[in-house]
Image 1 (cartoon, helix red, strand yellow):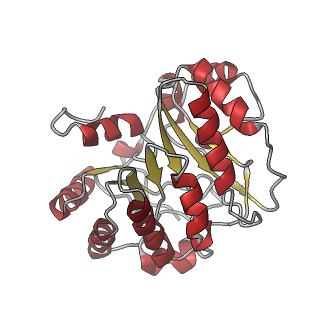
Image 2 (tube, helix red, strand yellow):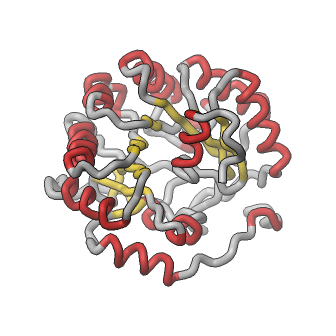
Image 3 (tube, rainbow, N blue to C red):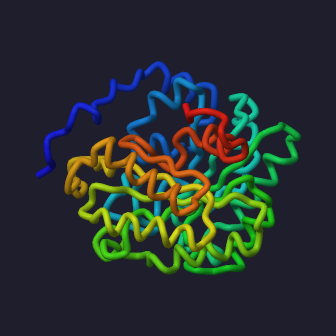
Length: 293
């Protein structure tokens, strides 16, 4: 049974007209956003700003993580027209910063890396000025697949560790913590000029000491940006949170990360990996530019 929801986690109901407006602007009902598929609590705010995170490679994941609201099962074949259609939607929305993520596709030889690269290429050939962030799966540890994405030159490469290593068997059973750390290390080694980013949830039963250890591990990969947010179950069928972390505790984690030397740590109850992503990278590029809003 979930603990009682505290006041700092109560958010206004998303305005459906904002969601409908962005969906209409996209003009393509076969394009997916992780905002909708993963039932993100920030969907109303982000869609009101005309920002969204695109979900490529379909809406069905080959893995079944305990925290995730995306459908799992057997995915449909890859749509080769998706990169061009997504690029057209980005231009239509007038986005200056676009985040692209995917379901995990363990059924594909390269885990979908070549499709990520195709999307980045399609965005580049439009000659529309924007920054790109990719939030990638672990590609089963395949460094060749990782290099395929990096060689397509995203502005930011993001891969989430999601939780502390002790909780992986329960929360993320088809992944491994060390594999995720190795991916982030390899990304910075191969492309040191590309910003790397990772994130994880709290409120799943981890201890404060374990959170500090994860931040230290991420620093050792030379990760630039870390996001930390409260786990909120996407449905009543999902695992309930162990507890609700206070804003003060989030601020403490932010301080620990910065003391470790991470370029930026964004932590708070509603923080998600792509939440205020453009403002975060601009803050990293220009330290002292003011608070992230």
